[in-house]
Image 1 (cartoon, rainbow, N blue to C red):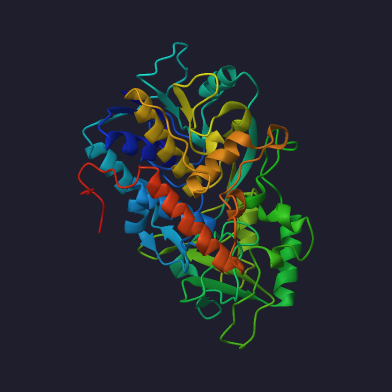
Image 2: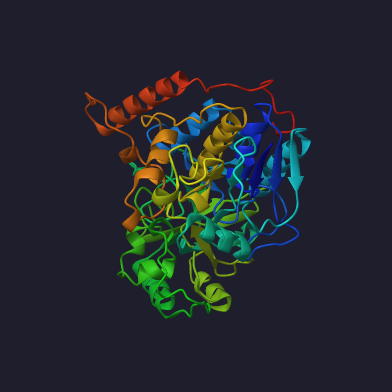
Length: 465
């Protein structure tokens, strides 16, 4: 049997990978016995931040990672594809249906036992036939955090993360807001819209856009700069993850930082004026019913009373009603290069694995990918076989190599990027051609690993169509 602590994306994916290979799993999830500051339900794989899985094209490294996971029969990718909502070139999901379907599949799986209890200790005895996967995520409970600190033999690192607000769609003023997706000649590495420097698709009109004039922007910026932050403890010396900075942190870096980050107007034309706005706030559909929209890149730690006042300064949101306001929470992670091998096993105990954000990756897809690999390798270990390190030429292998080989003195969680994948001996000319060639090599090498399409029956009946 394989034990998995944590029923998030990584833990759920690991459980699926083990069960479909015929190994029984006990999946421990402490909710609803004990909840967290940000979870709202007891469902497995609940998404508490964005509903976006970021870019879905092979020209983006996260798109390649998703395709590799599909080739490896990822449950997370199956359900994400089945519950997707319009988001241009990104893969975004209806967060409620996504969690419901993941939960339904694993509850129906006879080889998965879901134990609703908090685990607070790590066994001292090594059991190669009964490996343990720790995938408790960024909100690991205090007691288990203490046990993990003792286990790894050093203090954990941690950073604080923030959540974007969600607005009720019928409270938006559509006379001021226009629907469009960005139209740009080139796109940055990531098409996730949760952080600065992000982009959306080149076709369609999947986003609601709130255009701002220079005067609108200045009023908003001044109000943002003076807004009162929520009271926090021990935050001052704790770094935020650069890919998910609160808007007020970005604003303090300069008056135009937001206009070159989440509020950039590039590629958007306001049909009312026929011109590009000075700045823009984008709203992304958050569920299939299209009655909830999240504010792209607007994660924040501002007090809720000030948030309402501030966000209603945005053109089109003057009378907005908020389903959820932004908030901040602690994200905990280990110093992975000192702890993990490329198989996601720990260096001091081969029967113990870490996966998900706790293991030192950033992002939904990366977390699920680490759980996928941990599930495959825990299965191998329980069956007396050698765990597998995927080729570095694949996105899934490059991510594992990064977390196990990065500089431990300056370690920070990362998203997958093509820069983590070794270059071709004879790279093609042009970025797009190079990335397409890297993707072809990756998928070829993944197939050669012998792990592709090893499903018991090829179907998951509980997944929605």
